[in-house]
Structures are given as structure tokens and as C-alpha cells.
Image (cartoon, rainbow, N blue to C red; front, side, top):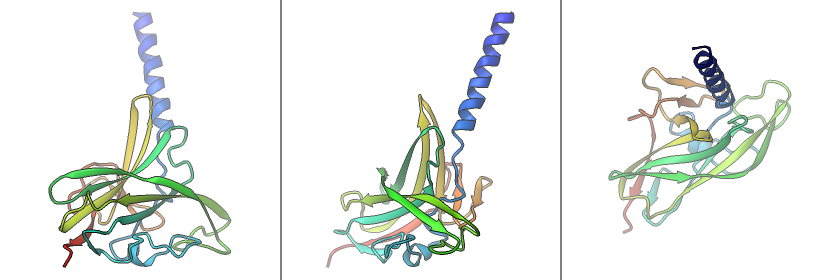
Length: 196
């Protein structure tokens, strides 16, 4: 009985340690506070907007380019991944993002949405490109997934356009996020228009 109890305690401690190592940092995560800011807010230190196309009405031949900021090493000791869950009206597609590089923001120059209030911090910039073969004419929707994973353990957070449900929160940058995969009516919309 002692051996079983010891094994269960060690297993429990391992789960607690994995959960603590897998806490995803969301305070610096950003794609857009609401729908319009993705067309206006600039990625710090660049001329790029977070919806780089500059419009949320695009033709069927256009690639959709999204930018996302995260805390540097947002997944702690775990591996990290940024993706978009793209719904084209028929089915969902998961499109993986790519790390672009570090972005420095500081209180004295290059602040972002009023932060940091003091000092400086380094963020990571990610790019997600949605190819035309994934989109369809009509309303298309997407949410951003931040994922931590290692040895079969995963932890996800979703960046969203609108609040909803018990699991949504808002971070210091005004970005709404949730730990729940249930985010219907909370994601961003892009209108895909057929070619003339």
C-alpha cells in the first residue's frame, strides 16, 4: 500500500510540475483588440498591420497574412506553436504560423498600446499565411491558437475578437483570449469575394 501511495504522490507531483511548466503567458499576446484594430495597429517597429492585407474584404486569389505577438518563450520550458483555426464555411483548417523574430518594445520609445509602462521587454512576432486554396467565397472566420506541448502534454489558449462564455479574459493589450475551444461567434471574420 505504501508503494502505491508513494507512486501516486510522485505521479501527482509530476503532473503539477508539468502543469506549472506549461502555463501559457497571455499578457503580451496580441492579434487584434476587436475587429478593426487588426487593420490599424502596426506591428511595433514596422509598417505592417496585424491583418497585413489592409482590408477584411479580399478576393479569392489573395493569400491572407496575419501577424501575432506573444511573450518571448510564451510556453515556458515547453515547445510552442502559433496557428490559425480557419473556418471557410464548409470545414475547419489548421494553418501553422512561423516565427519571424524578436520585437523590442520599451516605455521610452516603441511602446505598443501604451505598454510597457516602464523598462522594456522583448516579444516574439509570428506570421500566419492562409493560402487561397483554404479560403472560399463568402464569410470566412478565424481564431489564433497559442499552443504549448511536450511528451504528449498540450495546453492551448485562443486569441479571439469578442468575449463570450466563462473562460474568456482580456489582457493588458486589450486582447481577448480563452482557454476553451468553444468560441463560436467570438472569432474574426474575413469576406472572400469571387473574382469578377
